[in-house]
Length: 193
Image 1 (cartoon, one colour):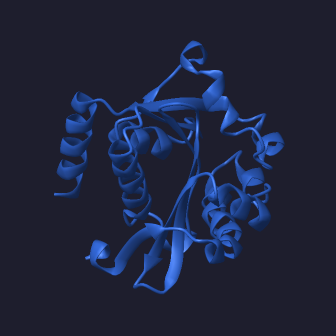
Image 2 (tube, one colour):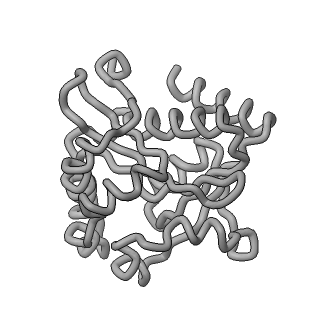
């Protein structure tokens, strides 16, 4: 089983050197998506930025068989009671195996334990797998009025901002109230069965 070979752990500074390569590998998915080829060569978060952000952020790494780092999730504080996911990447060769889901489940569980009320992310919903994935994890599309400036601040010094600005990007939010938790856990459990 895939989960038996997978470990999700908190990232450390030594991981910062490998994270850009994971993000580049993840972007290879877009080679086969018409109109999205430019995303393959777009800038990624560099090692220095990862290292700087790790001190203030929630970073998770997925390891395959406790050796090979195959994915990561980077989330930054979005103000009181909010967390903003800046990047979720899984190496191309390891995609579609539940690793992204495992990273996101751990992020949401950690957020709940820290009593964070909302987890935000920005994605391109023109990719059908993005919408289905995040909706299945309890996220919903949040229009611009719902987006607070504190959440936008979490992405303030993202070196990729210029390369993403022309895309059809939407903000999504997962509200971590008890009712939302139960629905997300039931959905996640049913999908694994």
